[in-house]
Image 1 (cartoon, helix red, strand yellow):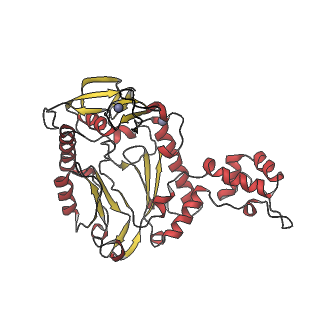
Image 2 (tube, helix red, strand yellow; image 1 turned 30 degrees about the vertical axis):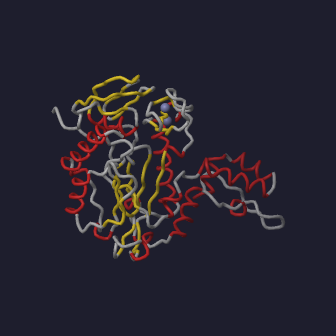
Image 3 (spheres, rainbow, N blue to C red; image 1 turned 60 degrees about the vertical axis):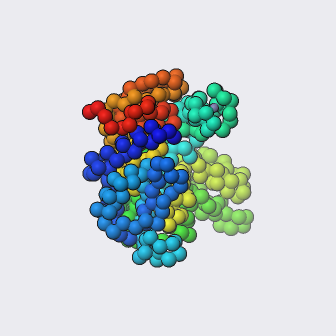
Length: 377
Ligand SMILES: [Zn+2]
Ligand SMILES: [Zn+2]
């Protein structure tokens, strides 16, 4: 990233954390949390930070202008000590659902390949069109279908948590990640103390992994047979019957216990909630802080509404003064309130600041010299 790009991003980030104070969600029990962040010009993560109060968090955000800010889901007696000495006190239960894990067929069509050698931008799916290097990094531009799919998975997750596991809906807060997914935070006293193993089991449950044929009506030979799942039953039996269909279940059961077991295992991707189990099982994770900017996009992690339709506009909270960039992008895309930008063939373009930041974060633009992020109002 060039010095001009860094200046543009740093200016926009500082302005956000100074001017848009109301968007930052100050974590509860802040003094017991571990914070981490990434900043421009520094590879890797600065971790094991502790902040005594909201004031200290505000100072850190405006002084460091971090591209990404993370906060532990756990609370500790000594959050800034090395992991073994922190003294874990409990942790919010968290779930991460990301469109990149959903195998969406539209994905390649709205992704670009940014060359690691020459920084030129090509359509995804091949080498760099300019220098033929195969060292490219894939970046996805926003897509309503992808975000709708991630939103649907999140709704499925919530219905499993509340319907099967008795989680109080009031204890659940869902955030748009600021890029292509949703983060679900559960703050409940009875879940707070769960260890890593229990959380992994819980992840398996919501993903419908590890189901055994016996529980779904097909025992080993000689054992007593139960009914196959039927629509309208509670929990996974009803969900499985609705997802796969009674006929398909009957057919698999007729093939014997092993065939039926195989069908249950294969059903996980179709009927389970497609969370990232690593995130849920990690009780020492630092997780993107609500209200902070996402360095992959310049959009904010904001509370999700009931529909994903307006989320890319709702999360676009940077200023909109015009900024000049040098843009290269083979696709038309939308960001924030701008419905249509691009395509660009290595050309100068004047776009709102939020779009300039977005395009620099995605690698499809560089700041024109002197753009600086300060400037015209
Ligand atoms: Zn190249
Ligand atoms: Zn898509």
